[in-house]
Amino acid sequence: MITLINNATSHIDQVAIKSNGRDYTYQDLLDTSEKIALTLLNGRSDLNETRIAFMVDPSFDYVSIQWAIWRAGGIAVPLCVKHPYTSVKYVIDDTQAESIIHSKKYAELVEPLFKDCNLKTIAFESIKDGSGSLPNVSMDRRAMIIYTSGTTGAPKGVVSTHANIEAQILSLVTSWEWSKEDHILNILPLHHIHGIVNILSCALWSGACCEFLVKFDVQDVFDLFCKKEINLFMAVPTIYYKLMNHWKELPEAKQQTISAALKDFRLMVSGSAALPISTLEQWRHISGHTLLERYGMTEMGMAISNPYHGERRPGHIGQALSGVTIRIADEQNNEVTENQSGEIQVKGPNIFKEYWQKPEATTSSFVGGWFKTGDIAVLDDGYYRILGRNSVDIIKSGGYKISALEIEEVIRKYPDVKDCGVVGIPDPEWGEIICASLILIKNNDTIANLKTWLKDKLPGYQMPRRYILQDDLPRNVMGKVTKKELKKIFIDSDA
Image 1 (cartoon, rainbow, N blue to C red):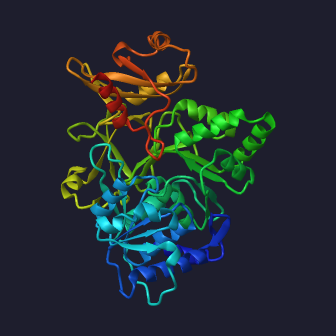
Image 2: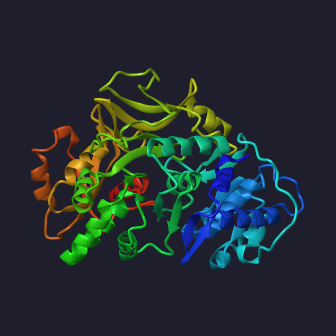
Image 3: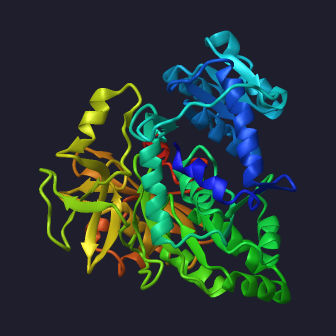
């Protein structure tokens, strides 16, 4: 029995989902997901891990479909609604999905799939009541395939079992003290672990309410906050930045109203990208909250978090979550001592089962049962601090291993810098040279002024050697800077 879904029977009359102007109870969710599950089975007794893709906006419909696939014994493959056709087709081909469920809104996008792939289509609006019974799905079954961003090649399908997902949920429900009294706004994409597990699944596990917006709008978010129903919020740094900028433009009375509403929240979390300390400090001024920063990956859910109670240390991702074991290892996979940098390696029931049909990639991601994250960190006085991703954020220049994230944090303190991105590009003399992309608040400032300012802030080997000015940094749908694309911009500008 899938515990997440079984838990819903304890909260039948409570509101589970608010979306599209309607309230849906846990009973509504159970009834609708059963109807869809029977449609998917179509007389079969069990989908037996058949892959079912789906493309609908974040909503009650999304949750009903996800639960239906699980209840029918299938593997859920959520598709990104913002991806182009080629990316969607890649996922369909790679998973060899049997069917795709889609809303009318995405009918035109997915239509070519039925010519290019051996795929059944199920229009969500056409699903009718079915008959039959649902299989008993064991927790060791494969439950979901989520695709990584593909920063080191083609995206890989991360396969999680129901037991993996349950462990990810339990570590957060325990550490962040979720309860049925909670009400959270979910504005994050639902093809990503942050939106699916951290918000949606934790809320539904706990008997809480998860609310969706039809479309993200900064003022709509603040209006919902001021209704004083929502008491949790989780977002990426880019979202907090947009909220802060909008708040600054409002009349003082409106600012005070919003700030008063924010102070009543139980918890606010930032993740999916490094949180600039400047953003943390500005949001604390506006809301009265120190954002809880945490660390995780598609392959494991969350593994490290600043504490719910206790010090939330700026620039740090915190300590191991409940049920998760962490070590920092050197390049020979030997554990290092505190204050020495190395790769974050993780053990626990939260770790994914495999990369879909990529046994070699799966095997190479583990050493002695430890999952190798590829992220470099240091244990600093009991708290982990991220230095960067081995492949994109650790720059090897002149014999030094340099953290791009640390350089970015310094550059953001310059008064006229709105944001920045730092990467290393190949260089025959230095191995790599440091390059910085700048988004300025004022276009009348000069790079020469910044370079002069940085001389007192960075050692010479950490100084960027090349700069470009951009209107914005290249980002993925989660708002995370795509360093691979930024590197290409610098390399192409040399060509």
